Amino acid sequence: MSTTLEAASARNVVQDPTLSLEGGGAVISEAGNHENVPALVDVAAFAPDKGESVNTLIADPPPGAPVPPILPPVDGFLFLDREKFAASFAGDLPAAGAQFLADSQVPWGLDALGGAVGQPAWRAKPGFYPVATDDRMIPPPARRAMAERAGATVAETGGSHAEYASRPAEGAAFIGKVAAGTTA
Image (cartoon, rainbow, N blue to C red):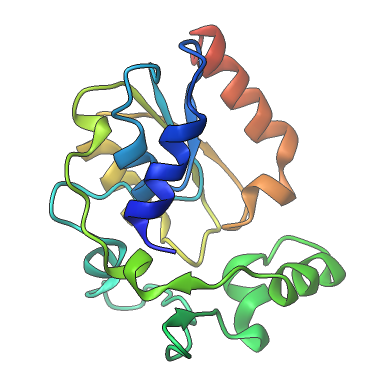
């Protein structure tokens, strides 16, 4: 699937005007422009600006930064290397949980990686950005920089890129505070 198609799909389900949109940054950067979305929560996500894609954001990592183990495309789709998945994506999950995520990963279409954002919703809507300090897919300094650029409220937690699985109570509490309008 492409970023454009995923954003269109997300816009189709946004009907509740009290809903804060949570999820992957490139998708909610587009879908979050819907009038019923009052706020954005970027969980384990990039926050691309106009004209940027995930590919442009990962193209030039700083020296020593972890690099996502994205395998070469097969039939137009991308997967993460299963052998490197746990260490890169889910290092704080039990081995069986990390293996399950590796085995059940949904492929990215090449367009999802390279699809540029048109008008990022974070330019007009409040954003909230939990930063998992042990993320090896999107390095914490990159996550902090994107959150700062977007003017987002940041909450730092431990955890890997799979923070939603390894620390679900913390994530749910943060999203609950956003929904209640109390992120302090």
